[in-house]
Image 1 (cartoon, rainbow, N blue to C red):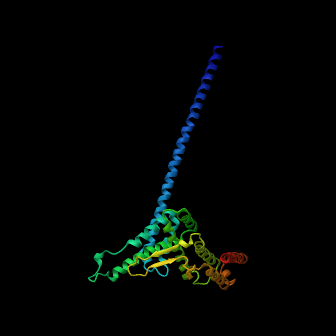
Image 2 (cartoon, helix red, strand yellow):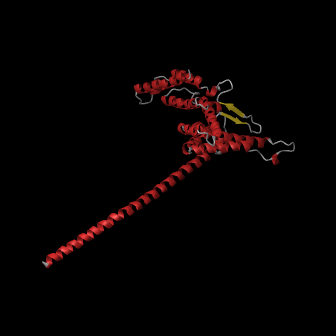
Image 3 (tube, rainbow, N blue to C red):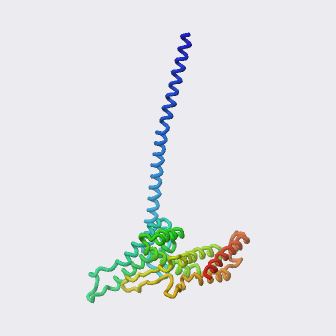
Length: 306
């Protein structure tokens, strides 16, 4: 009998120990979860900080590329050397950074002037000084234009929403940003895509994307305020322009209604079966379907201006 009681007591004691351990273990779960959650937060913060560091590095490298001497030497009609850096900058920058950087550049263009101590005995700035400062202003302006020109459409839409529709801090800057976008793309189209045969589906797509970006600005409800007034050059003629002139007309380089018709005509002239399929493995039917779809897109743009 005593042996039986002893066994039962031991079993009870062991059971109680297991129960206590289970309770302790259960009580420790929230602590473990808190520790795990804290570690996850630290890891995520570390990842975020790393990603942000990488993004900022991309911005710095893109800016340095844009401003490299070899890329800022020839700026007209298009600053081709600055395009690669501008694309990367537009992709890496936030919409706030894009519009704030535009504002800073506009202020630099406005305020940068040579010191009066550089004037000659006749009270004039030497030609070399004038050329240096006017070129510097043009470099800053071309930063704005190339960045705006190749800025992803979704970021442009966000700038319009935040700064124009909601009357943001940089509303006036946003109008210059949009004008710069239209001016750049218009000239870029004339000098590149429209200067050569539009003889492939990819060139066709690119042409539609670029001209479509102009079209979007021309149709914005705020189009009458889209303009630029850069008149602080020392000798260079100022750049004063608007999306539409006082008669409601557009400049030839961004006249979307005419350009869409021109593009459609070029498609018909340049897109031939041979120069799309020769040397490739593309399925002929698929190519023709792509061409038909892209032409339909252009026709829709044409019809939208009627």
